[in-house]
Length: 502
Ligand SMILES: Cc1cc2nc3c(=O)[nH]c(=O)nc-3n(C[C@H](O)[C@H](O)[C@H](O)COP(=O)(O)OP(=O)(O)OC[C@H]3O[C@@H](n4cnc5c(N)ncnc54)[C@H](O)[C@@H]3O)c2cc1C
Ligand code: SF4
Image (tube, rainbow, N blue to C red; front, side, top):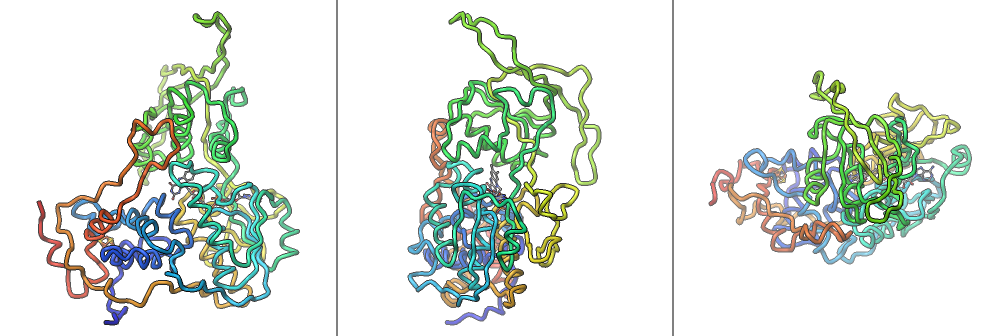
């Protein structure tokens, strides 16, 4: 029986998803064991469903109605299951791939992270423009490839998604850094800058240029590109963000014996998500909050008791911090505690003090006070006509799903500038059907989310194997039955919702 879409209510999870994925609908398909159709629903909203299923920070789950009473539905784990267990990874169920008629317009996209790749897909396959994709790195994927370690996103899966996106009407220029924006502006009808934030900031403390001290983002990039890196026995990392935490987990995997992450404030105000910090701590990383480095020096060479040879290491002068006040947003302002100085010994020091987009002044683009690109909020056009920008270079450090949302908006906006209607909607899933009925087997209250299977902690520190293994089909279906289908509440909440289960 055909279902009338106008009967649906807006679900809180969908409202919270920057990419607008129809979450209850794909969960409805998974509940019926129809993974291919579920994947197709996801694919209607984003071109990187696998990468998103692996690493999304899942803002939807914070708004999930089930979370009011108990744990929210594991929405992202179900999405990943839809990708992994569906028959057609590209979500089109064997149907021929739709390709728009060529428009004859040419667009340059600079940066192949999730924002750039998303824009590339819609501009080329969906809207018919010829796209040239530039990236300074030899491998495509942006931070998904050079920032995130392989224990979070397997390389071959990512390559598969990138190849799918770039298969039609896209000229690839990997390993090419764009230096002159004027040259691009002269050659192409529009330019999109999706350049992320590749400039690592410094702490500006004494000793930052000593051997053994480096930027954590450069460390991650080199490790992810397979360049040799000799990590010391004792590693100290400054910063409480993603880059610091993933560097710490990589350092352990490369053989470091102790890894300490120094957070310059309360741990619960660190930029990294608490589940990322917990995963690192579980693996053996020490997180030391409310401390900061003052300077770094080479320790005076001293004879090693065993070898009698001189050994050198780094001495980091530290101080403890105290909270002075908390602002209206709940953020603490810190001051050093008098007389709290102490010293840490380290063989490698990595600095993750934040990053900025690398925007040469010759590009003539307006920047915000924080150094990120200024754009028109509606069109994402920069201060230069025909030059657009999207992703972390605009928003500041964010997430894969926000970057994809920006890439979609930029593609639509560029298309309108080039004479199109900006419509990037797509239909891959079948017409609304049985997945729109409240399932009979809904789980009542009292059942927490299915645990995500993970590889044993003992095996982790030496291996870059994928940590989160993903739901099997049975777990995915069972978890889907925890969704109380807020989109179908026109006739009230399901009776099972108020029933407690043992
Ligand atoms: C270590 C780490 C872990 C993270 N973990 C997560 C996570 O678990 N979940 C999550 O949702 N998000 C995570 N993020 C954030 C997420 O990766 C970013 O928000 C996202 O990648 C931003 O996408 P983007 O397309 O804007 O830019 P990026 O992914 O940064 O891509 C920008 C690309 O532009 C290229 N470029 C820059 N300048 C030029 C130029 N002049 N010429 C040519 N190419 C250029 C760069 O080489 C790069 O490939 C993480 C980030 C990092 C660094
Ligand atoms: S219960 Fe289901 S429909 Fe409701 S917010 Fe959670 S995931 Fe979305």
